[in-house]
Image (cartoon, rainbow, N blue to C red):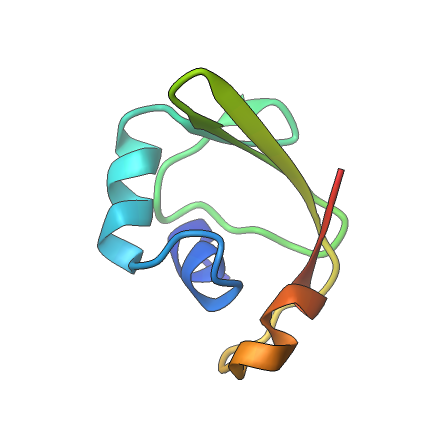
Length: 79
């Protein structure tokens, strides 16, 4: 699954276009490597999202194409 789509489906970032802009701006990395919006994510990957002064790290647990709101947080685990 593409990283921008994962961020949207998991409800980490509100819209896919915002996720794409974050990737293009170099604010998203997978396993320590800065990625583009089309790069693939798989279970077990560690995603780092940098917001202004802080950052958020999550581990990918599963990939769901359509995640209802109550199952979106099952896709990842905060580190």
